[in-house]
Length: 170
Image (tube, rainbow, N blue to C red; front, side, top):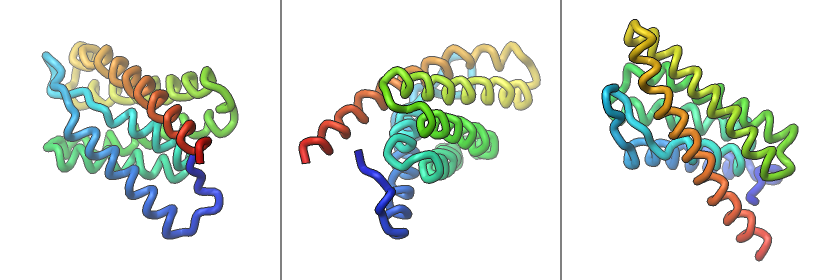
């Protein structure tokens, strides 16, 4: 897979900006409204996991946090942007840290992404409790966040396996 190990500063900047944009677009364009809440599910988490796999922990975390927060602002949910910035930063950083330490197999990758997805679910549970003032409203969104993280894991596993096979053919 593409590695930033030997990339120039410009290449790192461009790849980070590209993943930030892909996260933003995947969040804004591929969203499904969640019944009984003001939220939506999207494919942005898949791009976050792909970004971590391609860019590594540090650059992937920047792309995830900024791309997701910008999606909130541009998608009409600016009041969520500060929460999203922190939650997606924590999600991506944990995933990247676990992948860098234990990511030598498919099961380790899945577990690292599941841990990151769990942080996202917990983060939004707390954020929704604060924003809506009740646990009932926050709990309504939890299954949707779990589903979003799960779809993100599946999509990212499919995409990264294809990226790996493309690179091995070069």
